[in-house]
Length: 210
Image (cartoon, rainbow, N blue to C red; front, side, top):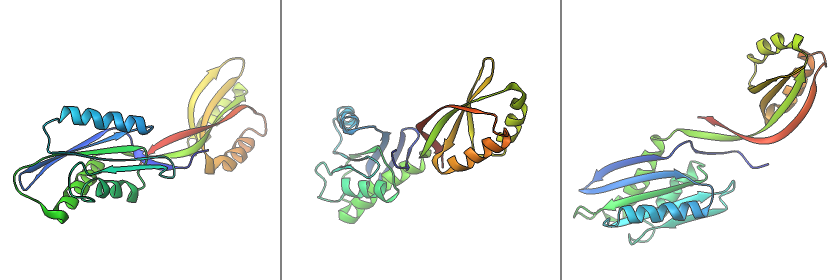
């Protein structure tokens, strides 16, 4: 099962002016390197008259793929500082693009680092972050006379009821995060007096806002 990590729930944006230069930041969620390359190219086409279109991305549970591009800015002043922000915040599967429209005043090396990293920091602040957790999707079959008790007691837990099917018996589809699986097994056995049947248990990834 994949490791737990943090990513953005939805794409986000930031824009600010520093010494007459406009910096526009986009953060997008990606699944693979092709997604990142496609988005970067899209931004290059959209901002064809920008002075610089700098980018970075992180992909994989263990940062298997990391890339940074300064796009003509002095080496190490744009893409790498942007990437550092994502890595330090444990952000995965995200591509960051910062577009600069030069305003006529040079920022210097330190100023460029602050501007490009600051754009990513601001865009992260504008984002809703989610933590992806390992979990199980468990389907359990119960008699109808246990339904009221289960409905009441499960509200006291962290277990998530995703779906109910009504046949000759009730089938609960429940999400349980990995670290709670032992608690769940004990809970369901106790609450039903052992009168339940597990139909399936499959690995799943769940996301929780943080």
